[in-house]
Structures are given as structure tokens and as C-alpha cells.
Image (cartoon, rainbow, N blue to C red; front, side, top):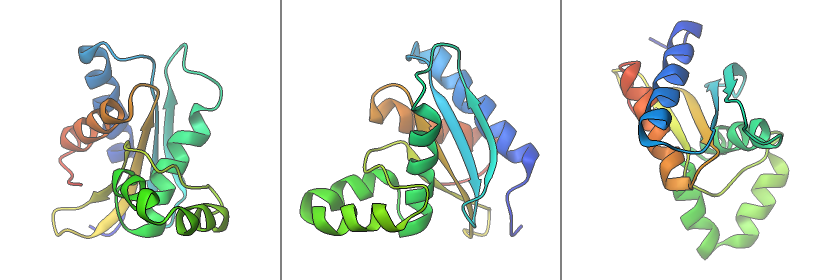
Length: 140
């Protein structure tokens, strides 16, 4: 498989939302991008604040842009804040250096997209994103 499908993206979103509800998280938003950074699917729970679509997309897009999770980007930002700030300005969707954005890999390990989750703590956002990938049978 070389690309993420709409069905897979919707399954990722459903899995992330299910995990968020089972954990009692605040309302989340979930963005799924293909490997080229194009939005495939998005969902915003009732009560999710109005900047969440951009944040979820930036978490996923940043992961694709730098080839690592947004958690790792956050760690990089501590050591090299000037680099991450500059990179965020270069990436059209931005970069959010906080957990919740993960690369999506097919069974062969090839990156086929990314998912970004926002709305609760960054750790909980990442937990929901990973649950979405698991629901779709995909890896991070």
C-alpha cells in the first residue's frame, strides 16, 4: 500500500474519538493527512474550540514535514527553538511542537500519512491518535 484511503482515515478518526470518549477526554479534533500533506478526513467534536482544526492539522503536517512525531518535534524545540520556529514558518500548515501528531505507516513501514489530534493534554491527544491507528490496523 502506498497511500492512505478515505476508509482508513475515517477509521482512524472513529478509533481516536472512541478512545477519547472512553478516557473521558475534553472534546477533541482529529485531522488525517496523506503523505503529501493533503487533508483526507477531519472531525471536530461538539464543544471543541475554534482553533482546533488548524492545531490538529499542524501537528500532523509538522510530523510529515520533519519525518518524526510532533512529540519529538517538541523535544527538538527545547534544544533548537530557532530551527523549529523557522521550520514552522516554512511549512504552509505550520508546526505544533507538542505530542498528538504521529506518522501513519503501512504494514511495510512506509509513511502513508499522518494524524493529528488536539483538545486535551498533549499526552492524551497522542494516546487517542495511536488508538485510531490501531483501529485501522496501521502503525506509527
